[in-house]
Image (cartoon, rainbow, N blue to C red):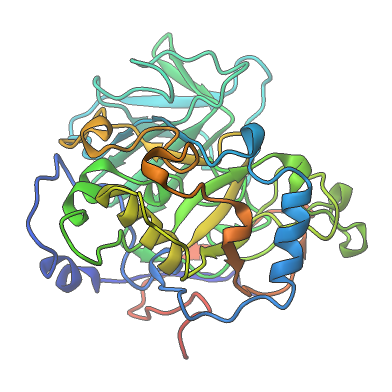
Length: 369
Protein backbone atom coordinates (compact mmCIF):
# COMPACT_ATOMS: atom_id res chain seq x y z
CA UNK A 1 0.00 0.00 0.00
CA UNK A 2 1.57 3.35 -0.99
CA UNK A 3 2.37 5.79 1.78
CA UNK A 4 0.21 8.93 2.03
CA UNK A 5 1.53 11.86 0.04
CA UNK A 6 2.43 15.36 1.17
CA UNK A 7 1.87 17.93 -1.54
CA UNK A 8 3.69 21.29 -1.84
CA UNK A 9 1.83 24.38 -2.99
CA UNK A 10 2.83 27.66 -4.55
CA UNK A 11 -0.33 29.64 -3.77
CA UNK A 12 0.58 31.90 -0.84
CA UNK A 13 2.50 34.66 -2.60
CA UNK A 14 -0.64 36.36 -3.94
CA UNK A 15 -2.26 36.26 -0.51
CA UNK A 16 0.78 37.74 1.21
CA UNK A 17 0.95 40.50 -1.37
CA UNK A 18 -2.45 41.75 -0.17
CA UNK A 19 -1.35 42.17 3.45
CA UNK A 20 -0.70 45.71 4.68
CA UNK A 21 2.95 46.68 5.03
CA UNK A 22 4.13 46.74 8.64
CA UNK A 23 7.35 46.46 10.57
CA UNK A 24 8.13 42.78 10.79
CA UNK A 25 11.69 42.20 11.96
CA UNK A 26 11.33 39.18 9.68
CA UNK A 27 8.21 37.19 8.86
CA UNK A 28 7.37 34.37 11.27
CA UNK A 29 7.25 30.82 9.85
CA UNK A 30 3.85 30.12 8.32
CA UNK A 31 2.40 27.47 5.98
CA UNK A 32 0.52 28.11 2.71
CA UNK A 33 -2.99 29.52 2.83
CA UNK A 34 -4.59 26.13 2.13
CA UNK A 35 -3.13 24.50 5.23
CA UNK A 36 -5.40 23.21 7.97
CA UNK A 37 -3.86 25.77 10.33
CA UNK A 38 -5.15 28.63 8.16
CA UNK A 39 -8.72 27.36 7.74
CA UNK A 40 -11.40 29.63 9.16
CA UNK A 41 -13.53 27.44 11.44
CA UNK A 42 -16.04 30.07 12.55
CA UNK A 43 -18.84 28.19 10.77
CA UNK A 44 -17.45 24.65 11.01
CA UNK A 45 -19.89 22.06 12.43
CA UNK A 46 -19.72 21.51 16.17
CA UNK A 47 -18.93 18.14 17.66
CA UNK A 48 -22.19 16.61 18.98
CA UNK A 49 -20.58 16.22 22.42
CA UNK A 50 -18.98 19.68 22.47
CA UNK A 51 -20.84 20.99 25.50
CA UNK A 52 -20.47 17.77 27.49
CA UNK A 53 -16.72 17.53 26.84
CA UNK A 54 -16.14 21.11 27.93
CA UNK A 55 -18.27 20.69 31.04
CA UNK A 56 -16.25 17.58 31.91
CA UNK A 57 -13.02 19.52 31.35
CA UNK A 58 -14.29 22.32 33.58
CA UNK A 59 -15.15 19.77 36.26
CA UNK A 60 -11.59 18.42 36.11
CA UNK A 61 -10.23 21.89 36.79
CA UNK A 62 -10.33 23.62 33.39
CA UNK A 63 -7.06 25.22 32.30
CA UNK A 64 -3.89 24.30 34.14
CA UNK A 65 -2.20 26.53 36.73
CA UNK A 66 -5.29 26.94 38.94
CA UNK A 67 -7.66 27.26 35.96
CA UNK A 68 -5.96 30.31 34.48
CA UNK A 69 -5.57 30.94 30.75
CA UNK A 70 -2.00 32.10 31.28
CA UNK A 71 0.60 32.88 28.58
CA UNK A 72 4.17 31.55 28.49
CA UNK A 73 6.56 33.67 26.39
CA UNK A 74 9.61 31.39 26.63
CA UNK A 75 9.71 29.94 23.09
CA UNK A 76 12.21 31.76 20.87
CA UNK A 77 11.88 31.47 17.08
CA UNK A 78 14.78 32.39 14.81
CA UNK A 79 12.95 33.51 11.67
CA UNK A 80 15.75 33.68 9.12
CA UNK A 81 18.93 31.67 9.53
CA UNK A 82 21.45 32.74 6.85
CA UNK A 83 22.63 30.21 4.30
CA UNK A 84 26.07 30.13 5.92
CA UNK A 85 24.78 29.57 9.47
CA UNK A 86 26.78 26.92 11.35
CA UNK A 87 25.32 23.44 11.03
CA UNK A 88 25.63 20.98 13.88
CA UNK A 89 25.28 17.21 13.85
CA UNK A 90 22.27 15.88 15.76
CA UNK A 91 22.85 12.88 18.02
CA UNK A 92 20.58 10.99 20.47
CA UNK A 93 19.84 12.58 23.84
CA UNK A 94 22.95 12.24 25.99
CA UNK A 95 21.14 11.66 29.26
CA UNK A 96 18.74 8.93 28.12
CA UNK A 97 20.11 7.71 24.79
CA UNK A 98 16.66 8.34 23.31
CA UNK A 99 15.96 9.52 19.78
CA UNK A 100 12.49 8.85 18.43
CA UNK A 101 12.50 7.05 15.10
CA UNK A 102 10.97 6.90 12.58
CA UNK A 103 8.95 9.87 13.83
CA UNK A 104 11.88 12.28 13.75
CA UNK A 105 14.46 12.97 11.06
CA UNK A 106 16.72 10.04 10.29
CA UNK A 107 20.23 10.22 11.72
CA UNK A 108 22.86 11.25 10.77
CA UNK A 109 21.54 14.71 10.05
CA UNK A 110 22.38 18.33 10.84
CA UNK A 111 20.56 21.50 11.84
CA UNK A 112 21.45 25.14 11.09
CA UNK A 113 21.96 27.11 14.30
CA UNK A 114 22.76 30.84 14.02
CA UNK A 115 24.87 32.21 16.89
CA UNK A 116 21.99 34.46 18.02
CA UNK A 117 19.48 31.60 18.28
CA UNK A 118 18.47 30.39 21.74
CA UNK A 119 16.85 27.41 23.39
CA UNK A 120 13.43 27.74 24.98
CA UNK A 121 13.65 29.76 28.18
CA UNK A 122 17.36 30.42 27.73
CA UNK A 123 19.47 33.33 26.51
CA UNK A 124 21.79 31.15 24.47
CA UNK A 125 22.54 27.69 23.13
CA UNK A 126 22.83 25.69 26.32
CA UNK A 127 19.85 23.99 27.97
CA UNK A 128 19.38 21.45 30.74
CA UNK A 129 17.32 18.94 28.79
CA UNK A 130 17.05 16.52 31.70
CA UNK A 131 14.27 18.57 33.30
CA UNK A 132 13.16 21.09 30.63
CA UNK A 133 11.58 20.84 27.17
CA UNK A 134 14.53 22.71 25.61
CA UNK A 135 13.01 23.41 22.20
CA UNK A 136 15.17 25.08 19.54
CA UNK A 137 13.18 26.58 16.64
CA UNK A 138 14.98 27.83 13.53
CA UNK A 139 13.74 28.72 10.07
CA UNK A 140 16.12 28.64 7.11
CA UNK A 141 14.50 29.48 3.78
CA UNK A 142 11.46 27.25 3.31
CA UNK A 143 12.56 24.77 5.97
CA UNK A 144 11.56 24.93 9.63
CA UNK A 145 13.79 23.01 12.05
CA UNK A 146 12.24 22.16 15.42
CA UNK A 147 14.40 20.38 18.00
CA UNK A 148 13.02 18.89 21.22
CA UNK A 149 14.87 18.12 24.45
CA UNK A 150 18.08 19.49 23.02
CA UNK A 151 21.40 20.96 24.05
CA UNK A 152 24.46 22.20 22.17
CA UNK A 153 27.72 20.96 23.68
CA UNK A 154 31.03 19.82 22.28
CA UNK A 155 30.07 20.93 18.78
CA UNK A 156 27.02 18.63 18.52
CA UNK A 157 23.31 18.88 19.28
CA UNK A 158 21.91 16.07 21.38
CA UNK A 159 18.12 15.72 21.38
CA UNK A 160 15.19 13.36 21.52
CA UNK A 161 13.73 14.65 18.25
CA UNK A 162 14.41 16.87 15.26
CA UNK A 163 11.38 17.53 13.05
CA UNK A 164 11.88 19.39 9.77
CA UNK A 165 8.85 21.01 8.13
CA UNK A 166 8.56 22.24 4.54
CA UNK A 167 6.83 25.62 4.72
CA UNK A 168 5.85 25.42 1.04
CA UNK A 169 3.80 22.29 1.72
CA UNK A 170 0.17 21.65 2.58
CA UNK A 171 0.40 18.44 4.57
CA UNK A 172 -2.34 15.78 4.48
CA UNK A 173 -4.59 15.12 7.49
CA UNK A 174 -1.96 12.86 9.13
CA UNK A 175 0.73 15.55 8.92
CA UNK A 176 4.24 14.07 8.84
CA UNK A 177 2.73 10.62 9.44
CA UNK A 178 0.05 8.65 11.30
CA UNK A 179 0.98 7.95 14.93
CA UNK A 180 4.08 10.14 14.45
CA UNK A 181 5.17 12.73 16.96
CA UNK A 182 7.29 15.79 16.22
CA UNK A 183 8.95 18.35 18.49
CA UNK A 184 5.38 18.72 19.85
CA UNK A 185 3.57 15.75 21.36
CA UNK A 186 0.52 16.00 19.07
CA UNK A 187 2.74 15.84 15.98
CA UNK A 188 2.12 19.51 15.22
CA UNK A 189 4.57 22.14 14.01
CA UNK A 190 5.25 24.57 16.85
CA UNK A 191 6.42 27.92 15.47
CA UNK A 192 3.55 28.38 12.95
CA UNK A 193 1.01 28.01 15.79
CA UNK A 194 2.58 30.57 18.11
CA UNK A 195 1.34 34.13 18.43
CA UNK A 196 4.01 36.59 17.24
CA UNK A 197 4.26 40.16 18.58
CA UNK A 198 4.86 41.69 15.15
CA UNK A 199 1.78 40.05 13.64
CA UNK A 200 -0.34 41.29 16.54
CA UNK A 201 1.07 44.80 16.12
CA UNK A 202 0.27 44.58 12.41
CA UNK A 203 -3.38 43.75 13.05
CA UNK A 204 -4.27 45.75 16.16
CA UNK A 205 -5.01 48.87 14.14
CA UNK A 206 -7.68 47.06 12.14
CA UNK A 207 -11.24 47.23 13.43
CA UNK A 208 -11.79 43.53 12.81
CA UNK A 209 -8.24 42.15 12.52
CA UNK A 210 -7.15 38.61 13.31
CA UNK A 211 -3.96 36.57 12.85
CA UNK A 212 -5.27 34.09 10.29
CA UNK A 213 -3.98 30.91 11.93
CA UNK A 214 -4.78 28.47 14.71
CA UNK A 215 -3.08 28.88 18.09
CA UNK A 216 -1.36 26.12 20.04
CA UNK A 217 -2.56 25.39 23.59
CA UNK A 218 -1.78 22.98 26.41
CA UNK A 219 -3.67 21.13 29.15
CA UNK A 220 -2.60 18.89 32.03
CA UNK A 221 -2.47 15.25 30.92
CA UNK A 222 -5.10 14.25 33.50
CA UNK A 223 -7.61 16.54 31.75
CA UNK A 224 -7.23 14.90 28.31
CA UNK A 225 -9.30 11.90 27.29
CA UNK A 226 -8.36 8.22 27.24
CA UNK A 227 -10.46 5.29 26.05
CA UNK A 228 -9.11 1.74 26.26
CA UNK A 229 -11.77 0.45 23.84
CA UNK A 230 -9.95 2.14 20.93
CA UNK A 231 -6.92 -0.12 21.28
CA UNK A 232 -4.37 2.60 21.97
CA UNK A 233 -1.40 2.18 24.29
CA UNK A 234 -2.71 2.81 27.80
CA UNK A 235 -5.98 4.08 26.31
CA UNK A 236 -4.21 6.97 24.59
CA UNK A 237 -6.05 8.63 21.71
CA UNK A 238 -6.15 11.73 19.54
CA UNK A 239 -8.26 13.48 16.91
CA UNK A 240 -7.34 15.50 13.84
CA UNK A 241 -5.44 17.64 13.24
CA UNK A 242 -3.17 15.67 15.62
CA UNK A 243 -1.19 12.67 14.41
CA UNK A 244 0.01 11.51 17.84
CA UNK A 245 -0.85 11.58 21.54
CA UNK A 246 1.60 11.97 24.39
CA UNK A 247 0.49 10.90 27.86
CA UNK A 248 -3.21 11.71 28.35
CA UNK A 249 -4.70 10.10 31.44
CA UNK A 250 -8.15 11.65 31.86
CA UNK A 251 -11.67 10.19 31.57
CA UNK A 252 -13.28 9.37 28.24
CA UNK A 253 -15.74 12.26 28.50
CA UNK A 254 -13.22 15.08 28.41
CA UNK A 255 -11.42 16.67 25.44
CA UNK A 256 -8.96 14.62 23.36
CA UNK A 257 -5.40 15.32 22.26
CA UNK A 258 -5.52 17.44 19.11
CA UNK A 259 -8.95 18.91 19.83
CA UNK A 260 -9.72 22.10 17.91
CA UNK A 261 -12.01 24.51 19.64
CA UNK A 262 -13.14 28.06 18.94
CA UNK A 263 -14.06 30.89 21.25
CA UNK A 264 -17.81 31.49 21.27
CA UNK A 265 -18.90 34.28 18.89
CA UNK A 266 -20.78 36.02 21.71
CA UNK A 267 -17.75 36.24 24.03
CA UNK A 268 -17.76 39.73 25.57
CA UNK A 269 -14.46 41.49 24.76
CA UNK A 270 -15.31 44.58 26.81
CA UNK A 271 -12.24 45.72 28.74
CA UNK A 272 -9.71 44.04 26.45
CA UNK A 273 -7.15 46.22 24.66
CA UNK A 274 -6.84 46.18 20.83
CA UNK A 275 -3.97 43.68 20.81
CA UNK A 276 -5.82 41.23 23.05
CA UNK A 277 -8.92 41.56 20.87
CA UNK A 278 -6.89 40.54 17.81
CA UNK A 279 -5.92 37.35 19.64
CA UNK A 280 -9.46 36.70 20.86
CA UNK A 281 -10.89 37.15 17.36
CA UNK A 282 -8.29 34.67 16.13
CA UNK A 283 -9.55 32.19 18.71
CA UNK A 284 -13.08 32.70 17.38
CA UNK A 285 -12.18 32.23 13.71
CA UNK A 286 -9.20 29.86 13.67
CA UNK A 287 -9.37 28.31 17.10
CA UNK A 288 -7.04 26.63 19.54
CA UNK A 289 -5.44 23.22 18.90
CA UNK A 290 -4.40 20.97 21.79
CA UNK A 291 -0.70 20.29 21.28
CA UNK A 292 0.87 18.95 24.48
CA UNK A 293 0.53 18.19 28.15
CA UNK A 294 1.46 20.86 30.68
CA UNK A 295 0.18 23.56 33.00
CA UNK A 296 0.45 26.91 31.17
CA UNK A 297 -2.37 27.10 28.63
CA UNK A 298 -0.86 29.35 25.95
CA UNK A 299 2.65 29.53 24.53
CA UNK A 300 3.40 32.68 22.55
CA UNK A 301 6.61 33.41 20.70
CA UNK A 302 9.05 35.50 22.73
CA UNK A 303 9.88 38.97 21.44
CA UNK A 304 13.62 38.21 21.21
CA UNK A 305 13.52 38.38 17.39
CA UNK A 306 10.60 40.79 16.84
CA UNK A 307 10.34 44.55 16.42
CA UNK A 308 7.18 44.88 18.52
CA UNK A 309 7.44 43.97 22.20
CA UNK A 310 4.74 42.31 24.27
CA UNK A 311 4.96 44.95 26.99
CA UNK A 312 4.24 47.74 24.51
CA UNK A 313 1.23 45.79 23.21
CA UNK A 314 -0.19 45.35 26.70
CA UNK A 315 -0.05 41.55 26.45
CA UNK A 316 1.00 40.13 29.82
CA UNK A 317 0.97 36.53 31.06
CA UNK A 318 -2.24 37.37 32.96
CA UNK A 319 -4.15 39.35 30.32
CA UNK A 320 -6.80 36.66 29.73
CA UNK A 321 -7.62 35.90 33.36
CA UNK A 322 -6.82 38.74 35.76
CA UNK A 323 -9.78 40.99 34.92
CA UNK A 324 -7.78 44.11 34.07
CA UNK A 325 -10.13 46.89 32.96
CA UNK A 326 -13.13 44.77 33.91
CA UNK A 327 -12.38 42.20 31.20
CA UNK A 328 -14.02 38.79 31.63
CA UNK A 329 -11.62 35.90 32.25
CA UNK A 330 -11.51 33.39 29.39
CA UNK A 331 -12.83 30.02 30.62
CA UNK A 332 -12.87 26.61 28.92
CA UNK A 333 -16.67 26.82 28.83
CA UNK A 334 -16.37 29.94 26.65
CA UNK A 335 -15.32 27.64 23.79
CA UNK A 336 -17.00 25.27 21.34
CA UNK A 337 -15.44 22.08 19.99
CA UNK A 338 -15.58 21.53 16.26
CA UNK A 339 -16.00 18.09 14.73
CA UNK A 340 -12.70 17.02 13.13
CA UNK A 341 -13.49 13.32 12.88
CA UNK A 342 -13.37 10.18 15.02
CA UNK A 343 -11.03 9.50 17.90
CA UNK A 344 -7.96 7.46 16.91
CA UNK A 345 -6.32 4.99 19.30
CA UNK A 346 -2.62 5.81 19.69
CA UNK A 347 -0.53 2.72 18.85
CA UNK A 348 2.81 4.60 18.68
CA UNK A 349 3.42 2.74 15.41
CA UNK A 350 4.55 5.70 13.30
CA UNK A 351 4.08 5.50 9.51
CA UNK A 352 5.72 8.53 7.92
CA UNK A 353 4.20 10.48 5.04
CA UNK A 354 6.14 11.05 1.81
CA UNK A 355 6.47 14.47 0.13
CA UNK A 356 5.39 14.49 -3.52
CA UNK A 357 5.02 17.51 -5.86
CA UNK A 358 1.48 18.62 -6.60
CA UNK A 359 -0.59 21.76 -7.10
CA UNK A 360 -3.47 20.46 -4.97
CA UNK A 361 -4.27 22.73 -2.04
CA UNK A 362 -7.13 21.51 0.12
CA UNK A 363 -6.22 18.30 1.93
CA UNK A 364 -7.45 19.17 5.38
CA UNK A 365 -11.07 18.12 5.51
CA UNK A 366 -12.62 21.59 5.77
CA UNK A 367 -12.83 22.34 2.05
CA UNK A 368 -14.83 20.60 -0.69
CA UNK A 369 -12.99 18.17 -2.97
